[in-house]
Length: 331
Ligand code: ADP
Ligand code: MG
Image (cartoon, rainbow, N blue to C red; front, side):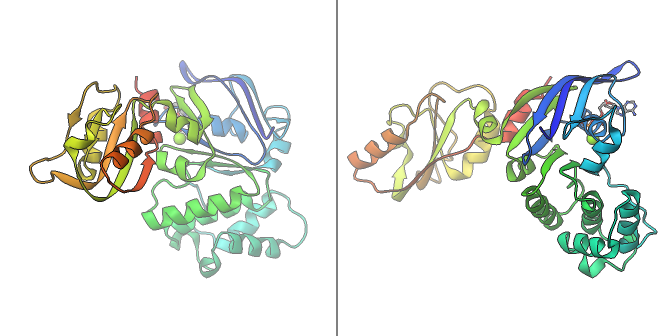
């Protein structure tokens, strides 16, 4: 195992930041540690990187115990802490060489620094002071310092927080690329990030694990209804679609987000129609809902054949991880 955590509890005074956490991460996994602010994410990552000790329980990285063999753990782990603390007065190259020195790296240090600069796309910024860099490039420096000693496990604490959309997708791309060769555990409170990067998500809430599964399984978990998107080659009146067996709601594309917001939790019995009918009595594209145990796609096809309609596409909408997250972490 790359990471093993067994019954770890962390108290800050009387406050329980972690409450009996256990988990295992296999080599090569990219795991998202998801949770609202104050859930205990940073606390867990600080324990795994030997920055703070657990109050009780055991944690190990690549088989080395964080308490007994902390030097070995630090050799195996690259860590990008929350808020990415950097020496703003140092030059990029100087800083990376300094970090290489801390790791007591042998061999050609400038060459290693070059490698990191190339990997993280810092070529144009390498001779600047860190303080002169944009947030996105500082984040790249943070990743470079975490990677310079070629660790097996990468621990990233909210690596994309505060980035603009372009920087965000660049850093996510970089993490995905790096993740091909390393075990990654990254914390975030952004659901889309886990969907975009991680194969597995661990959701923590008030110091406890409330879910630990593949991203895909989690997306299906809290499904209170299944949504199917259907596109016909010609406009179809909504009233017709209501007759399909198993269909609960019919929703026009323009009313779709409103629909999703309106009934987050409970399945809605009967037929509701949020479509602004007066203006859009017909549409090529419709969303149809059904109860989770029912797959209405076959019925939609039969309906199309019976009514001499051509179906251009018929797809099941994925339940958004965000909904699962909200469901699991509300009080
Ligand atoms: P997250 O990273 O998920 O936002 P943290 O692990 O930072 O959560 O914090 C978990 C809880 O522990 C929070 O309630 C926080 O206020 C508390 N906490 C974190 N660090 C300390 C500390 N050094 N001293 C006291 N309380 C702390
Ligand atoms: Mg945190």
